[in-house]
Image (cartoon, rainbow, N blue to C red; front, side, top):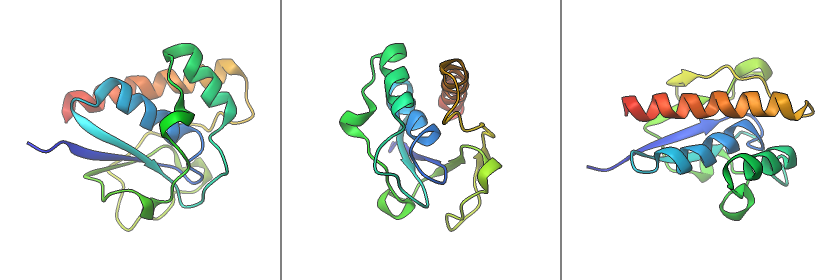
Length: 130
């Protein structure tokens, strides 16, 4: 059976969605394929996210990930919005879920870790239902 494709979407594809892609690959690659994308792109992944993901999980997000547009990834079976506090991007169809996560950009490491741990829990729940 082919694995489902899960897309984690936020506006800039530089922080929350990148974290979700990395944790999806790390925790659930046996169940689904993880992608992240946005409707705008940044020149690099959020450097606080990169640093903290290395500290917590030993994952170097800059090795295999980069900021991508929605049109740059395969059509997903499941599309998840990271949080619409900045306005939900239109991706051509309705989202399957909205995780409602605050963007930790510019906030403390404690806020980043809180967001990362919530994404980890959400990935584990998603793995169980896929």
